[in-house]
Image 1 (tube, rainbow, N blue to C red):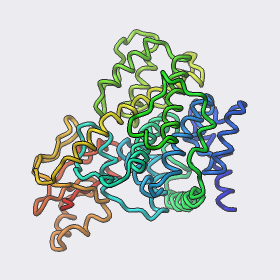
Image 2 (cartoon, rainbow, N blue to C red; image 1 turned 30 degrees about the horizontal axis):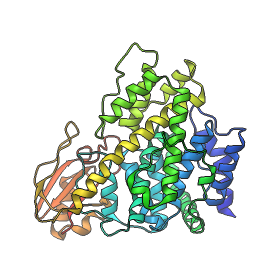
Image 3 (tube, rainbow, N blue to C red; image 1 turned 180 degrees about the horizontal axis):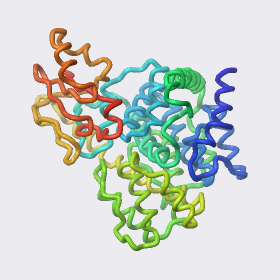
Image 4 (spheres, helix red, strand yellow; image 1 turned 60 degrees about the vertical axis):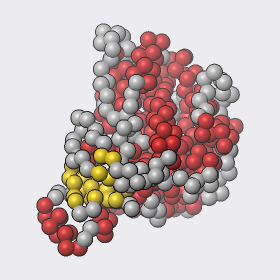
Length: 426
């Protein structure tokens, strides 16, 4: 009963008030059908609600997240680890809070999986070598990949259209809000155990085969392929209807050449009538934490209707998440052929802090609060005194290499709050 009351409050009061520049509801019957399934299987959460002005996008987003995160063979807690880690990499405070609460509620700890998920944010940025799903079946791999794609998309939408907090509480009540979120997420995880695969697919519009995107790894999971293809088709059709061709072409070209991490959001044609729209979408694609809410108001004042504005960001976010997927199979192939005997230097992320070069073997992520468990007791006090908690410590044998969090995870905004530690796994 309490979970139901909290879900209703999120849907009717908190969710609608947290969305910027877009309506939270629509009179379209398709929206209510999607909301009805959300209430049954999860709750009507604002990251879905913000899509209401374009029902096919709402259905596509719900289907993607439901069929990857809320159903399947991989434990829900494992996939919540992926959602949380990707949200950290993309610096989305709202999603970090929500999925950290889910991870805690699920009592899940998988540092290796978290490190792999964070590494997905940059084609040249992985600092872990061992794949956490090396022995997973093709069906299980498809779930992991789909969860990665889903949250690279959803982080971008949330960063543009929602605030930083899951609940609109003052800062001094963050602890209480966190406890409430864990309680609620625990209830949602228990509720989701009854979810059946494929139930979201009838909500999707008929996919256009020319516009649908179905990656090869999804072939083992028809429901996953249907959700991905249907969602992509909906976004492409909406973009054709609402976005000028020169804007689509410019953004598409920029995304195709992107290899992860921040990139120049400046429009290629500064005087073009769509220049401001290009910059907003480029920020959402390349560095979502830099997207400016005031840009939404500017575009609305310039005549952008809610459905056009939503389509613009959603299409760009989906193209960016599909671009991320391009380097995931490459990472998989590289690690499947890795013997673990070679030593390579840590990769330096140009322009984003520093990390001393050194040989490394199978570095894995260890949350800061557990880092001391992996250090020699006699070093603990010295290191605690020497190094602020905001710094990254990469442990390799007897050497401690320090660098800032941005060098590893582009964590410029949240580095003072979330600092990873790396240690050799073998």
